Image (cartoon, rainbow, N blue to C red; front, side, top):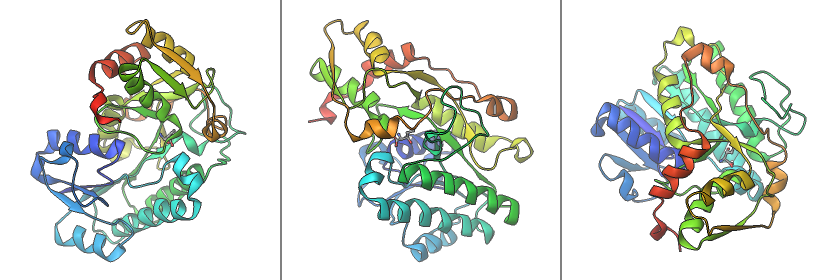
Length: 314
Ligand code: VAH
């Protein structure tokens, strides 16, 4: 059985759908803090789970024969800056709970998401390498960098097969994102379709590494399916999709909605975005397990405008 913790989130929802497609609905359990699953998760088993309840998580995994865990529960960058103590607690204690179950031999494989947020203001900004200076200056980035160190430690010391990816900003329409600095690139499609205008919380020339969700989910499953001997990186792999600025994204949107207009009101999230790279070098992932992106910004814009459901926003 496979357990997806944080199944109600932006990545979690898509991972459950992809894993159920691949393995069959009844073998993929969706778990989240919310009492009831969203309708997207309704076609398979769901369990309400507080990932901080260590005993509950441990008992559930052992009693239900869970052999693989995807741990997506976390506070993202913007939210974490507002709740540093809880962000650290949730992001780290949840990881230790699952890594320790791996150490005890209860789990065959673990996936845990890292992020380009592990890079900081002293990191080379363009084509950021797999190995480089990393001095993250956000609570979320610090938790992801520390989490990468612990994943590598548990692999080296206890042979825990935990695998990780430094996701860029992810763009999808199935579930609304929550609390990310890159989420302007999701909000913009809903607003463009609903109101024809968007008030962007980042400045027009803020270039960030981004990726369409289908690429991110495919990367995750390809990494998890790769033979262990091909995995040379046990912190987290860089992967790249496309990089763009709000101005470039607007140009693409206008090809579909000529009347669309944007205004820029940078807020506290600008300071977070300014510490992150503008593009990522993913050579190592390409060499080790054959990663390659499929969605450029043109395709991303087309598929988002075609599919975002504006009844989901107020
Ligand atoms: C965030 N979407 O904005 C997440 C991601 C690289 C960004 O980690 O916090």
